[in-house]
Image (cartoon, rainbow, N blue to C red; front, top):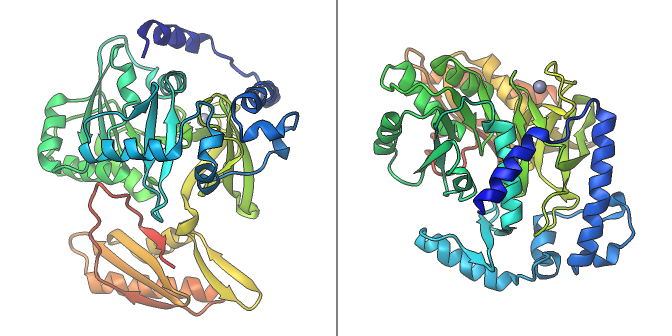
Length: 428
Ligand SMILES: [Zn+2]
């Protein structure tokens, strides 16, 4: 990236719009969205047909829609087949950043094998760096700050900030972990960024006295951060774990100083598609009004978010009490009067109430009336006994909700750390 430009944009961060109240924020969003849509109808052949329409008259999109209309939707004339070819080649060799005319091509694997393609221009990248700097990395002392990142795939976005006060080192979760953890330890990072699965491993090491490093900031990325894991990390390192809510579709949220996740409404507009309004659960529909290369307009995500009341930190941005999981983490059962949803949190709570001794668990819906689970227990606890408590607890949960579900104990399924970890998953 153009260093001078980046430095300018980082200076701008300090002067960026601050909002005295929510109405000011909404007015700002409106203004930005109007400009953004004007740009899109001129530059994106797909969106040209919506000229003059308001945002709420635009159709919803998701990954499937985006991929179907990829060629006509992006504003830089990149063809899907060409982009895939280049991305696959880069993935296989793992040693270069795939680009077409200066636009970086990213590929996301997708759970059902449907690959998503993402385009990031230098300007988009600049915007991202600005956001990550202002939201996450800014409150640091004036000194070279060492950042350690554990990723499943090297994210070249972060490298853009390398030249400033931040030094980054990347470790690859697909490679042997032990030697990398030792390397990280001697690197002694000020900031540690990793998925919760790895942070959990590090916390266990730290509590056992086998890990010496003491970061000043720990940031959890890429997976749901569950409460028991969060508590373990916080106890081990004596600090609040921060969370980044980030996916290929955008940099959607991050935690404030007191640990609440706020949505990044200064550059993304969120609509709520309610899935359980009574309890504040919704799927976000996002419009990123800064991303110019690949339009993200009314893009529906399948993450289940839970809204929270305004945060005592005073931020005007929507507070989220948690990112609960994805739509395919919800268990569904047929009842006479319709479909019953059991949300991941209901299962989590049930397990935490049923057993004190469980250290890790997996619960899967594997049949229309069948749920399977596996557990690991803490030292001094009997697996059989804890499994029995949990089996009873789950059966009771389903019964209370009005469905008869068979609950079975199964073998623990080892999932390598480089794969996305999901404790609760609907496999149907
Ligand atoms: Zn807050």
